[in-house]
Image 1 (cartoon, one colour):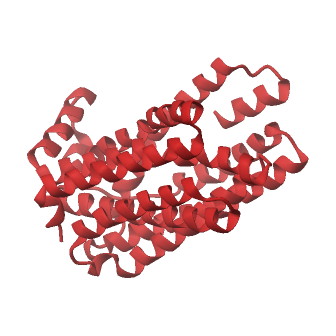
Image 2 (cartoon, one colour; image 1 turned 60 degrees about the vertical axis):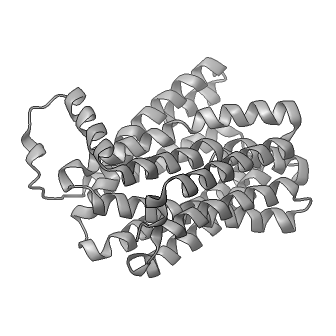
Image 3 (cartoon, helix red, strand yellow; image 1 turned 180 degrees about the horizontal axis):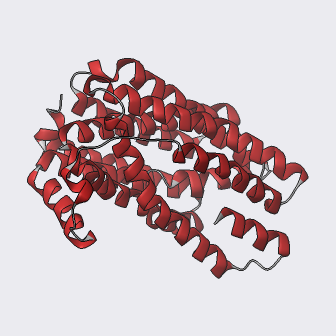
Length: 315
């Protein structure tokens, strides 16, 4: 999709409906990629290093989040979007080669099963339904992905234009998110498997993430915007690392990919949150819209923390 988008941009034939189609295809492919990638990790590391491995995987991704937006911003100073998409497509050639070289043995009973996709999907839903703790963690993730994560795609660009007056400033701000996310991932990699009271920590992380959104909404200078973005990046990544490690460690190996696919549904709902955020930003302004998004995220987290004691007792 990156190569197709690049060719459409360079040729000057791209239209809004083409953007929707390529984005849909890219999002659909990630729905297969992410569960498979996450379920590979427990097959490559011992159980007592699972949280550390997931966090290090996140750290590697966030190193690219730091450098990627900055490089993109620099490219946009001199070139248009076409060369930027062409560069991204070229990078993915190396990604495909590296992924192809991964070889993992598995003895899962499902490896040679003849069950249909529908049966496997319902088996995954059944596994989550039978484990209330995983179900409520799924709901908690749903909250942050709909009401929290869209701040990067909706509000950060608007803030960059208002505060920095440049579209290349978006890369600078997103790099701040990446720096915070890298710090959060490294902290989990250092302490992840020795963490106690994990449920309370995860709830606190979302509360702190919401606080970062509030701070970002009220920020009037780059010296406040950047720390706020670093906080949101650190809290989001550390929450997801602890979250995924707990779910993978609690789930039978043969069902790990299916459980992770359900958690990927949360990521698939990010565009819904972005749509809500866009409507709010257009109607009451970026600051007011971001305050509402952060407020809903915090309120839902507090309700779950009080109504579901099992979340607080996760250790």
